[in-house]
Figure (cartoon, rainbow, N blue to C red):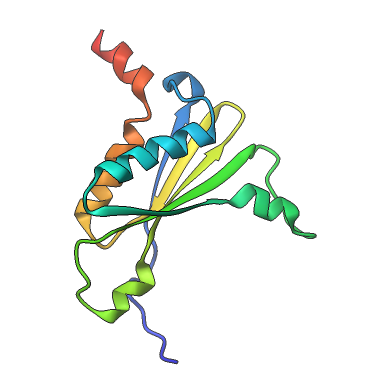
Length: 137
C-alpha cells in the first residue's frame, strides 16, 4: 500500500440556517430538498442516505453532543470525469445535515471540481427561502 498526499488539509463548507429562515421543518425534508437537486442535475447521481445519529446512538460507546437532535448524510456523485484512478479516493460527495434546537447545520467537504462546489453551495443556500423572501419584499 502506498500513501500519498492529495491536499495538505481538508476545506469544509458550512452553513447554519435558523429554523425561522426556512420553510423546511426537519432533517428529512432537507434531505429531500437535496435529493430533488441531485435528481435535477444530469451530472449527479444519488447513492444513499446515511442516518449517522441512529448509527452512533446504537453503539455501546457512541457519543452524541446533547444539542444534536438528528444527523444524516446524503451521498451522491458528480460524474464529470475520471481523469485518474486516484480520484476515486475523494468520491463520492456527501452533504451532512444536522438538526440543532434552533437551527440546521449543513456541511460538506470541498470537492476538487469548482463546478461541484458551486452546485452544492447553491443547493444549501436555497434552503434559506424565508430570508430571501423577506429581503426581496
